[in-house]
Amino acid sequence: MVTPLFILGKQRSGTTWLANQLCRHPDIAGIQHQRHFGIHESAYFSSVMGRYGSLKVPENFVEFVKVMAGSDYFRLAGVSEEFLLSMWTTGYAEIFRAVMNHFAEKSGAKYWLEKTPAHTPLVDTLANIYPDALFIGIFRNPQEVAASSLKLETNENPNTVNSKFKRKLFISRNILSLSYYNKKLKSFQKRSDRIYTVEYKEMKFDLEKTLHHICQHLGLPWNDAVLGQSYKPNTGFKEKSERKALITNSEKRMIAILTLLGKSTPLIAYEAMNRIKKSFNSRRSLPEAFFRLTNLEQEQS
Image (cartoon, rainbow, N blue to C red; front, side, top):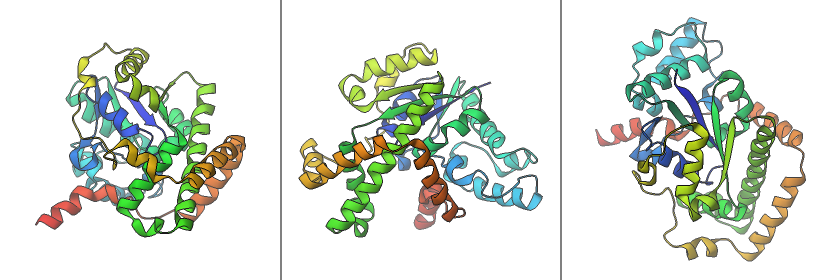
């Protein structure tokens, strides 16, 4: 049986970088594509699980299969619609594991790796449905996360951050979300030995040492291939100075205050707010990245 391995952490914390490096190990398999900067996020447990109701209901199962078979993630995993239909009466978690096992076994990997930042609040759920799963969490400096997130938003959705007020609102939400994700990881770490955590700054300072420790934790032999690079870095910055200049002094002070506030806010309060948020987004659209390759093919045809 192939072991599930989940990379968790806030968006723009280095999850893509870490996942891509680990996927270069011959014993680790992850769904990757150039259009997704290497590792592809499944968003399965945050956006799909439970979305179609009980999969024992034929109509629900057929709808689920139609959508999943056309998604980038399942297509890149190499599974057909027939493969998915053959698993009728099984549940969401069992189907995802079967798909990932199928993908990993083709290369003889011992682990299949999944990376979706939005799965971080679901770490306890993932641990329960996959009792043998292991986790790697990554932490990054709040100001760096804010700068990286702001840069990405400026490039992709400039209208949402085109004023001082919008910028500060975006940064505030980002930092409070970061605090929640970090609290969730640290809480799980206190209760379980199934998670190994790393700091982004440690990866930047000594990537080889960080990856050595992770391989040891996973019980894998060291392989120099993990130090190579298969995909270009997922960053919008060309120079370090550009990142430092992006956040204003007043925004830096705000980040510092919000970080302290986030640390003092009980995890139970974050959980309550997250449940309220989910109740308003119970059937929102699937993420754009779900069908990026499909849309690209349509544009080119």
